Length: 346
Image 1 (cartoon, rainbow, N blue to C red):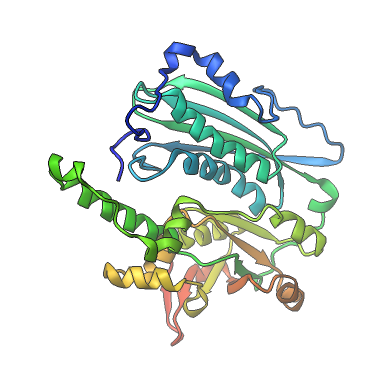
Image 2 (image 1 turned 45 degrees about the horizontal axis):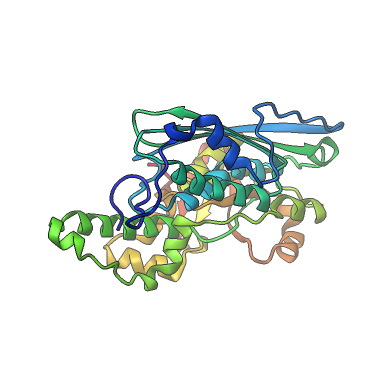
């Protein structure tokens, strides 16, 4: 485990105080060779297109812990957090604007590492415009991100209306990231209990058996072709949600936006075997992790029931986990025995 704060550097590693080179010189270096020009003005002039915007705020100690989160991973993950809701609504991400608050304990090298992750995500998802502003912070690291996405109006005009029995689908298993976080938090607690002498001799434990759930938390991925695959199949979702605060929260939000109810079938929720194993290890119900865990970075889509066969053919790896229903029924989890449990977002 690393010391709390910015990345722990090897002895003798260069640490450049930001005040030594100045904010503007640091930002020049961050953009040098990336192919992007730093400008806070994002002009999107695409005739016949619609623009969607999204904003996110990530706070150290609330949304991430630098004891076990590499800055490069955090930068990459922050970009996905901002563009995920755009993909969920079938928009193609176009631009990202960052405002980063930095406390005195961060050196220029830390920001370079963070920005490397951001640029990697931007290029992977074909972001056309990227900008950055740096601010002083008294409370560690804070990351504000604004994103913009575009989609042709003629494509959006084909989005179907959600019928009362429309299918609810999910693009991958849930609960793994939350279990990965539990592994990291457990190791942090054990490290903090060490004496100073013990800490100096600390050897990172073998966490290879937790590789999958750790990757789901530290380095989630989004398919850059998420939107284009729907457009090419001529099968746009009626609605969508980006899952970051647990499946239950996404389902409740979906019901609120569509003014309807939902039934989610317990046995249909995809949960990875490593998630099940870790939940058992810490005496937690894996379904609880899936419903109320966070950072899954998966999508929840609503597909007309009339398109069931076509959808199954075009997207065989996407799971159908339930369907919409009357608003009066609320959001409920259906057990294998047919029982109904109200879905509550914690």
